[in-house]
Amino acid sequence: MATNKGGRPKYVPTEADRNTVRNMAAAGIPQHNIRQCIGAHGISEPTLRKHFSAEMETAPHMVTGFAMSKLFKLINEENLGAICFWLKTKAGFQETSAHRLVDKADEDREIIVRYEDRPAKTAAE
Image (cartoon, rainbow, N blue to C red; front, side, top):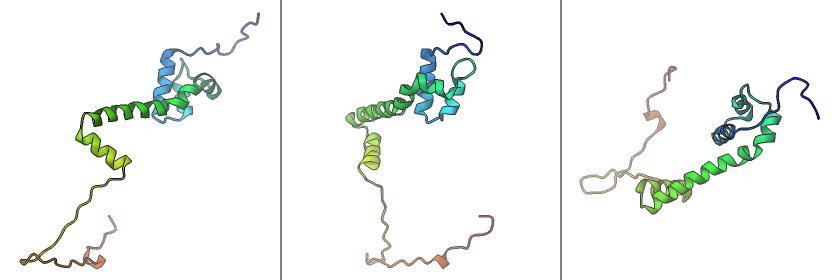
């Protein structure tokens, strides 16, 4: 039977460590920062990859899937904000505004804006 000849004891991941890695990976935190938050004194990057590669790979997709399921639920409940968000971000819709300048006879008036009509920027801007 092999004996421990010193150094750090073998790392054994806990469920709390798995949750920490999932949350940090989903938030886009780099691996070198994640490993510092695991265990009592942090772990090495090879140890992080060995024990948590699945969590680091799938966490961002799991959060996206969760968020999308909540969005779909709101859309199905006819939530106008959720519907507008989906249309703007996924269906290419955009808000626009058009203005007309008309005279007393309701005829369109031409507007010409030149760059020289705008005040010059100062050095402080």
